[in-house]
Image (tube, rainbow, N blue to C red):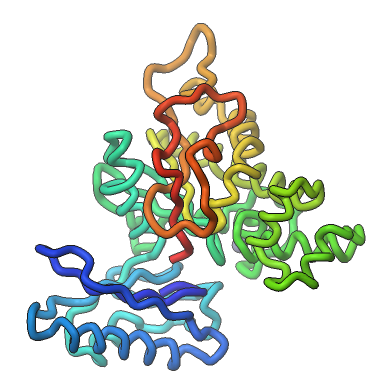
Length: 340
Ligand SMILES: [Zn+2]
């Protein structure tokens, strides 16, 4: 259950993925319509596979913050009108089966750890930042999700990277989400159009798809300096947030996923520069630019996610940090996860 997409999959332990239904989250119609869509989709899959398999339960990944294990959404900024909604108990009542609710970024982090970059690097702990409609994050320690005391751990999207920055709907100024989400990218572009009369950015209003994170990316890739400035701000914001995470957690791996992570070629260099500037711990463990004399043996890896659908077709070369040596740091298939 995402702010943009509603995806429902049937999964059997012995067979794996059986079928996936992709729907759009009818956010503007309201919560009840979305819940009905979700329930009907689950029931349709139950009908299809009910004669072959027994229905064991439902797992829902939803945007936070939420209280766990109760599965009550608290105040999800990308699902307005869902405040205090008891998602788990409402679904259990409607479906008559055990339902588990988990934060979407936590589930993405666990998947990356077990089947994605964590598996590639051979590590069992990581932090994943998801860049979609909003920005979320999940922490996996020794193979298990770190929930914090009540399931609210990993709200890195609302870590401030600029106290003098714009006001976030959460009440803080300069949150990472304002600069590194799809909504944030469009917001920055609208601001520049209003202030600087950027011809290149303004022209996106008249293109077929309109002004979106995807059209901004295309414009930036085509060389537009204003679009590139926006991805630079995104990279700097990510680098600052990562510097705090790296210093606090000292994990071997940080993964960036979600549809907006596909803009990696435009923001990664700024992100790595800011990360190296802001974290001495990163500089000591930088896998690509180790300090000459006192480099630590253990390395801090920052990589795009391996799992999930990719919004933009990239080859592996797109993931390389410029000036970096070409080595196993780079995701083999260069695919990134889409917004949950
Ligand atoms: Zn915020």
